[in-house]
Amino acid sequence: MILDGVQIVKHANGDIEYKGTSNSTLLNTLENPAGSPTINLTLSDGTRVSLNSDSKLTYPVAFTEAERKVTVTGEAMFDVAHNAQKPFIVQNGKALIKVLGTTFNIKGYTQSKEVEVTLLKGKVQVSDNKGQHSKTLFPGQQARVGQTVKVIESANIDNAIAWKNETFAFDNQPIEEIAQTLSRWYNVELEFKNNNQNEPFSGIISRTN
Image (cartoon, rainbow, N blue to C red; front, side, top):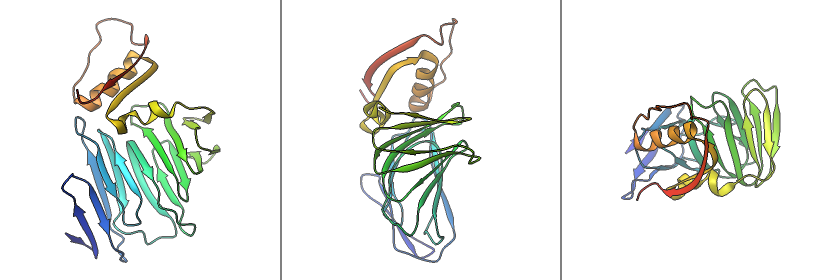
């Protein structure tokens, strides 16, 4: 399929890849509904994105501006193609992430109070949506963005990207938060019959078995 001069290829394994360059200013939106498996997408600049269930990504068919800007709601992992002349900007309702070339995970669902940005490699600048607070992250750190930007120095990377390995990983998390995660993956609504929503649990289980 050709869209405004850019070839869109859907591979046999379901991965989607944009190939080529053009002067197109067209925006595409890829939505991965609740209950759906991870979608892997390669943008026209070579940046690779994995989109979790109940998540949405809006991106240009071709990157023609001075900055490469995309918008994500939900959870996604980015492996950004390096381009020092064109910074890569990820926007969310609560946070803004600026990078040149790096690998990081962003988790920012609509119902979440904070956006979590976890850095695997490279360096990113994380700001709140109003630009009033900003922090630079280095590998192994996590930013939590709400009214301010808080940095966790030694983040649990394995837990943050467990979804990429088809796994649920919970570390002392409230049962209400765990239920939200399960609801997005299985596309079901969970109802509590008691007042123990804040009781914490930990554990690792497969998402597919």
